[in-house]
Length: 237
Image 1 (cartoon, rainbow, N blue to C red):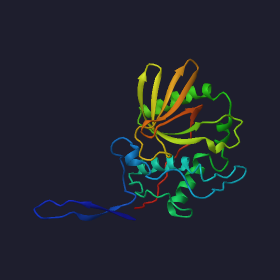
Image 2: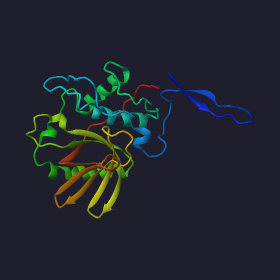
Image 3: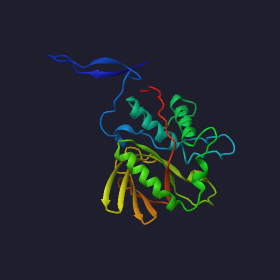
Image 4: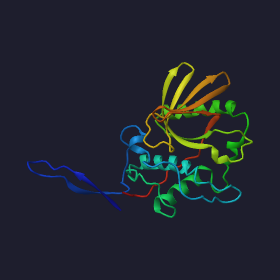
């Protein structure tokens, strides 16, 4: 498959000519750091239908969406050097992009056994987040983005889908004990200021999600790394 780009020709009076570029490219080295406004999806994580999942998982209601699929797919596009689809419209059920996001969501949850789901239900998550924080910041320092599962609600919550997934792509040290983890937040497209602010308190980590441009501040009970293996995403306009 090919995608078409414009290339400006040299010489007086010449205009941009269409150039066909193979997709996916035969070789790939991502250029520059990941940035949500450039490499994230342009639509919000809010779908119009209930999304059934294999048993015993409960279905995902429209208010929750496909955050894990969007986080993994955004990284797929970045690492594959394929331009992310430009649409700002939430993909309709059954379309190529929807199906890809749905498959990547299942992958992020550990399909086919979904071994990652119980992690959203464990207690003592602040203590368990400390080694996850250390491993995440080490990966980010080495230039390796990480898909994170964010635990918002306690283990007794009625719906595990009240939790979330994001893509971490960098860090900023705020103080000796406070670090901002920069994230692509599928709920807030094009928000380059989205971070998970983490404060290390002995054996625990206290976390807050902050998106200043959207007026968002939300407590995060803890987080952990989600499984990720790169896949080749569809070439779409």
